[in-house]
Image 1 (cartoon, rainbow, N blue to C red):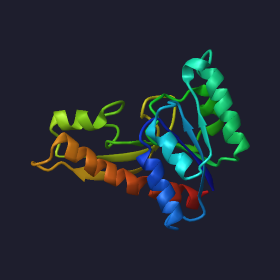
Image 2: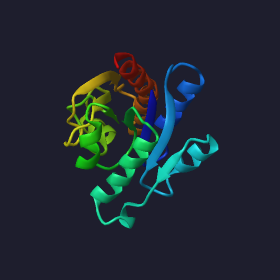
Image 3: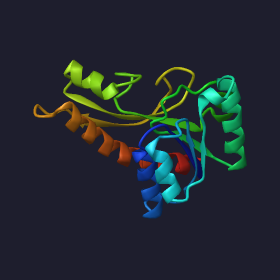
Length: 189
């Protein structure tokens, strides 16, 4: 199964996926494309070190979302991608990609959806004072973090946690859960 990862930042989840592939923990899967909407994102340098093909673009260089999503769709088709994985991609996906990838596009979110959708989910959970939060992998739909849930894992919020320590715990779980979700998707094909 050929996957593409969409990311806008550090790329730690992309690296966790690639490391799982290299360690043969994620079998029958290849990481064949990074799609990134920020030229200066740290993930760009990381994929170059690992020789992962990429498509890096600036949204402002296109007249609208439809235009850049049309180019992305063509890149996905050319790479024969089977599954799109949103891992820190800080942009809502529009109709051009949703129509072609419905049921084959998953997103990683740092909360137990439906709680704390959108940006700053870890901060939202922290400020609310919940005793438990977590990580969700869900299918992408037209809403923000509203698609059908595929996998979830709970993360306890300990009394001595800080927002930073909670974020670290959540990121560690993300690095485990996302490869698991990809493997489960591949097995269910």
